[in-house]
Image (cartoon, rainbow, N blue to C red):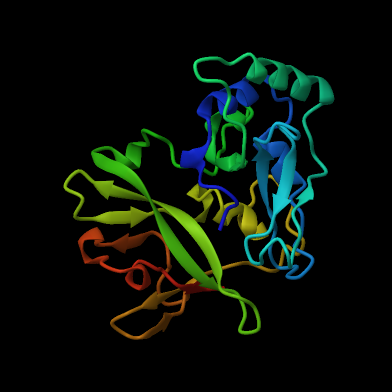
Length: 240
């Protein structure tokens, strides 16, 4: 999982970074770092909200703990001038003072995208195909990449209808974590091997087995939120 839940961030700091940064999500994604322990996956880009490294971008491994696969500074960074200006504005915050701390997934915050880029791996707040839908939710997905690797836990963005009786999880291009972790779905980075493509086999509880993607696409995933009563029931396993 990510190093800090975004709900705990001081969003005034996020707004300041959005106004001052000159290194955007697209820039970081173009240089997504290959995981040294699992070359099939990329690390995700997180931005630091700590005072000492405010605005610095790091590559974070979603597969292993940082003690196993260390978080490192990204090769793409905002300029020193942009970070210094952002920190100066953050230190001027009052009532209350800035609450520094933690990291934020860059792709989760719209302000950190370049305005000139129309394609964003996030769900539009008002997409035409989801008109009439209710609120957005996060659903934990467990992805089995290989038998010899740990299970990959990734938060997926889902949408509930107004009655909160039906849920839909859109495809990888609309998932800010999944789209960077799996290079095949990264729209800003050239594929390492154009002949290799990624698909997901969704686990079917009624079958107690995985349904191959060649038979049925895993996305969009439909679910009934009323039937999610325990953590193990809320997981949506898939295999690569």
